[in-house]
Image (cartoon, rainbow, N blue to C red; front, side, top):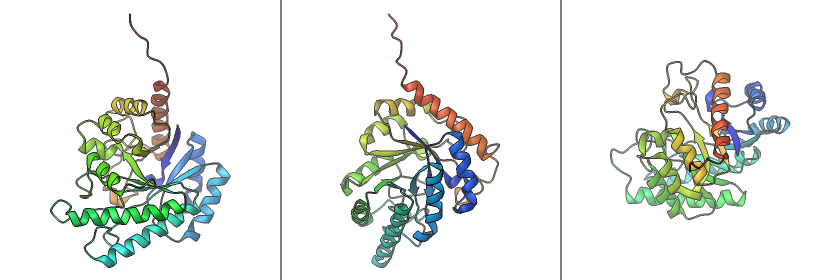
Amino acid sequence: MKYSMNLLLWGNQIDDSLFPTLELIKEIGFDGVEVPIFNTNPEHWFKFRKKLDDLGLACETDTICGPDNHLISADPAMRKSTLEHLKRVIDCSLVLGATKLMGPYHSALGVFTGQPATQDEWKWGVDSIRELADYAGELDITLGLEYLNRFELYLTSCGDELIRFVDEVNHPNCKIMFDTFHANIEEKNIGDTMRKMGDRISFIQLSENDRSTPGKGNVDWDGIFDAIRDLKYDGWISIEAFSPKLPVANIWRKMFESEEQLMRDGFSFIKSNIENLQVPKLISL
């Protein structure tokens, strides 16, 4: 198993001001980081990549799309420009050495029509992501699509919808990134949803119900770790937590003592649970 920390905890400005944070992440014991890509100039990322390499930290990337980049817009020009935007994000991911680009970029965050996705919107999304997967595949990068809860997204807002979407894209470079925060809102049983996704899952974000320290809230962690064991999943597990430093998360109260406390406690909680999965259970006779 490999352990990662999502840099969105420190907001959306990702530059050399975070270098001391990267050093702390490495010291705590993480194997890598999730880097959110909002700056789509590849040159911006060369210095950041060098710091990661110097520390021996691996990197995978994330992105989101806002109202100006909507892959299921009725406007063909916007769909085309969004696709080009996402290809630039993939170019930046390549600079960073990432093999996965994750997020809910199949549609725009916070854009709603007041009704479910239409057949046209669904098709525009599938066709666009399939083209993006072709481009990503040429660079040995895999897309990890994510569903968000109903208050943030409407194209896919539960596991069944995302499974159907990814299956219709039907591309080896299009998989699922699973986020426990949204599942905790939308699923009847988080573990069963993960099992249904099966080997479509290429990355797992562990996030508490209030986006603070994993293990301190009401998420069904036993069910999640049982599913990880049942799936024989052995890839990346990442902590995704937010604070007021990320305004789009709408968190305006103090959720934890410090970023360092959150990382240390979260890392310890996750690693101990993963290690416990490897211990054979005693059979009572």
